[in-house]
Image (cartoon, one colour):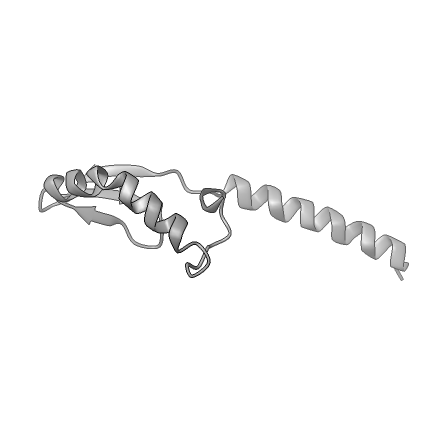
Length: 86
């Protein structure tokens, strides 16, 4: 039977391994042209984000507005636990 000290040590090892595995499994963000000619971005969530080039351009041109909106509404927005939320 394990002592409490042994269990705590094993728990810390498992936590460290879990964090290492989470970091290693972080999906790479990739892009490809969809069947209909849109630009699909993979790796942001469960499904790809697909927009046509003019939509991406319009969205990218709003970069500063989007960042300002996020800053103004930071407390209301739900943040997932990822490196990109910091």
